[in-house]
Image (cartoon, rainbow, N blue to C red; front, side):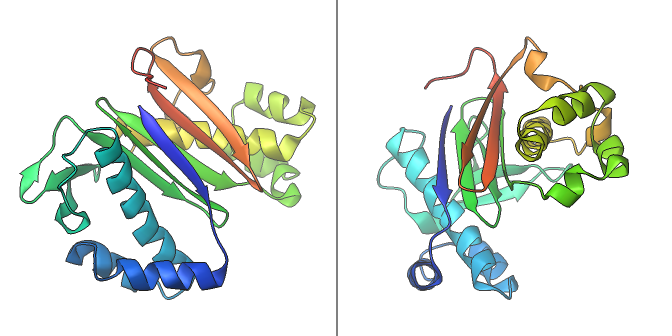
Length: 210
């Protein structure tokens, strides 16, 4: 499994990247990017696709001669995306994309993988007991309340749930998932932090390659 986390740049840089990538990506991606009315959304939609292509080529998932415009995807009955190169579905390549106001995240693997990045939740959210009870188990609520940084702990736990849902690709309600997912023997979780955000990646325990 390979991944990359990248901070969101300034507006001038975002504008330049959007202008560069719009002519290079497939029509479906260009159309999706232009549905965003704000620069940030357009940038994230295009840049995650470029990073995905870079990871696929640099780690030999795809031949170096493949172009960004050839890379697109189809969705299964649950809405989980699958890569296609030209018109051929790449069933042995899995990927996951995520972005927030602070960062974008991309992961690729030969087996199912999930990645999520989230801005650190506000103090008002963490201080709302009803919100915590709706989104976290009793054990997780205790972890959050006892943490040195409750906002960061909440965000870390939330990204783990989101990443796991993306790996499964079944659209399950996150409240029905195992609450302490990092204790599941079948999976390996990696969590990291950046400036104002946290991210988590989940994969099968035997598929970590770096």
